[in-house]
Amino acid sequence: MDNLKLLDLKLVPCPLNVVKINLALEKLNVNEELLVELDKGEPEVMVSKNLKEMGYPYQLIHENKDFIRIKILNEKR
Image 1 (cartoon, rainbow, N blue to C red):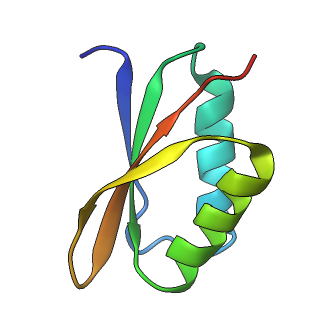
Image 2 (spheres, helix red, strand yellow):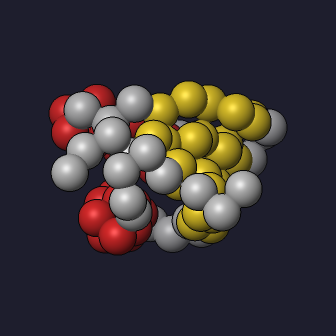
């Protein structure tokens, strides 16, 4: 599972979490995946919007009352 990286962004405010995700995605090779944990609410909305705008496919894989975990596939180069 070395094609999977984890980025814990719980308690990281907007827009810093969006910037950190973008930087992490730039470092990934094509078809590597990034798991991101972030708080629900504004971080969830802003990150989702940014990923859609940039064309990165992502999937919600875990959700509880405080945070979500998404998996982002880097298909770009």
